[in-house]
Amino acid sequence: MRRHKWWLLVMLPVLPVFGLFHAARQAAAWRPQVIGLVGAASTKAISPDGRWLVITEKDNTSVVWDLVARRRVRALGDRQFAFSRDGKHLALVEWEPKGRFYAGVWGNLSESASGQKLRLLQEPAIKGAYIARSDWPQAIIFSPDNREFWVASSRFLRRFDVKSGTLLRKTAWRGLGGDRKTVMAAAFSPDGSRIGLWNGHFSTLHDVQTGKVLGMREHGGSYGELSFDGRLNFERLQPQIIKNAATLQHMWQTNECGTGQFSHDGRFVLCSGKNGLEMHDVLTGEITGRIPGPTSGSFIPSPDGNYLYSINQNQLLRWRTH
Image (cartoon, rainbow, N blue to C red):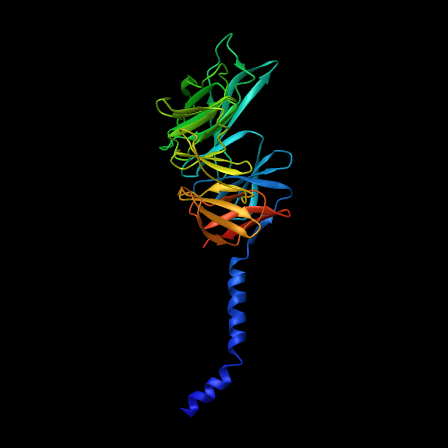
C-alpha cells in the first residue's frame, strides 16, 4: 500500500503536464493543413474522386489544383466546366461570339490529370441559324452513367454524347410560367435527376429525363443549390434559407450562417460562423455538432466527407471534419 502511495505522490505533479500535452495534440490535430498559396480566390468545385479542386481567382479565372500533389496544374479561363462522375475527365463549354449573336455552341472533353484534349463537344452548325447572346450556359453536369454531358443554358437543355462528342438532343425549356421564357439561373441536383430553374418571376423544378415540371412557384427566388436528391433548395442569401425544392415552402432558416453548403450525403447543411463550423440537420435546422473550421469565406466539402477546403489569407487550407 505504501509503495502505491509513493507512486501516486510522484505522479500527481506530472498529471497536469500530461493533460496539457494531450490537449495540445488534440488542438494540433484540428489545425488546418496548408495545401498551397493561391492569392485572392474562392473555392468553386471539387471532382467526385476528391483529387481535383477548382478555385476562382479575383479576375474570375478558374484554376485546377491537384490536391494529392498540392500544386496548381492548369487554368480553365472563365469557361463553364464539369467533372465526370469518376473524376477522370473534365468538360469545358464555350460560346463563340460573332457580332450581336453567338454562332455556335461547343466545348471539349479532356483528361483531368494531363489536360490532354480528347474530343470536341459541338452542336452542328445550321445555315442561317444562330444562338442568341442570351442563350448563356447556366449549369452543366455529366449524366449519372457518364455517357452524356448536359448543358442547361438560358433557353435550352442540350445533351451531348460523351463518346462521339455529337449533340444528341436539344430541348427548349417549357412550363416556366409568365411571359419570360429565358432562364436566369439553374442548378442540377448532384445525382443529375432534377434541375431547378428560375426565370426572374417563377421557380420551377424539372425531371431531367422527361422535362416534366415537378413543381412551380411564383417569385420563389433563385435556386442557390439543390440537395443531393433534388428535393431541397438552399438559398445562399442572408438569412440562409432551406426550402422544399418543388413547392418552395419555407422549412427553416438561420441568420448565423456566413457561408453554407449541403453535405455530400445530404444529411446536413454545413455553416461557417464565428465559432467554426456548425452542422445543421437538413430537415429541422437543429444544430447537431460543431467542429473547428472556416469562420468566413467560401468552403467546399470533400466527396467522402472527411475534409473541407477553404481559402484564407491567400492560403488554400484543408480541415478535418471528424
